[in-house]
Image (tube, rainbow, N blue to C red; front, top):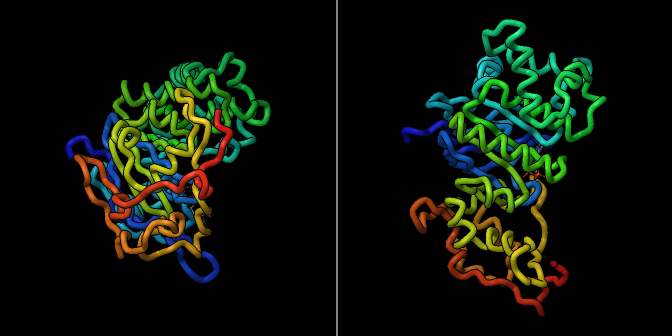
Length: 339
Ligand SMILES: Nc1ncnc2c1ncn2[C@@H]1O[C@H](COP(=O)(O)OP(=O)(O)OP(=O)(O)O)[C@@H](O)[C@H]1O
């Protein structure tokens, strides 16, 4: 794996709830190469953010247990110390999370917050730093960089704050960018500017990117590979075109079927029955998706589902995919109303 940047191996991230630990990420093995965008998709609560935060080391160590390995450039950072991680965060590892307010210091002007990350990781004169900050603000689509430099976070709209967070994340040209729903709070035009920036980081700086999103349109446009997560596990992983052209796992097929297609005259959408159970009641044995497809015979699920490579680089968990069919309209699997 000469291009390998990040290699996650058999990762399990468990959170303490009352007196017990429950795995929110379980048996995840995933690689991200230089110059590659790996998208992670799945319903709310399936463990996408827990996975991303494990890579960055942001969990509260007193209430979180991490088993397995997270190799960054060959060095295992799964249980690295805060100081080791601080060295990496903001320089080698950039991160953009959903909520821009928590990422910014309310008492510091925007310019200084971006300067701070440069100061920590780069040798620059004060003038060079200021120039770079203005350049970054311009890059993320802030209309008057000189003016915004002196503003406080509360003086900016949610979209502007998110752009500042992104400026901080890319300030040091990170080799690995973790973007967790980076455009959720932004309107469509700003969204595409931000996605262009992430693309630029990949193309020009050869960065590896983990992109977490609910938007399958964004995945189709941006990703090189896609990992579909369900109940803490990867249930399907494939190059992006394979995943969209030839989805196999019942969950992936249901996800794709439940999204309106602008290009088709589809007048009905598939409804995935049920919800992802809360962490303490997640199924831990057998096929975790089984309870969402009760019309499929029990016998077709593996007792201990593993990932099978069904085509080069295309992996599917559990053999139930070979026997899956959708519930039809009469049985309540589809609903009308998509445009
Ligand atoms: N610190 C925590 N302590 C206890 N449980 C947690 C913690 N963080 C997440 N969880 C639980 O772990 C599971 C996975 O959460 P996670 O935030 O990773 O999901 P997600 O796929 O990122 O969802 P979303 O798309 O809504 O962000 C959920 O059941 C969540 O309630």
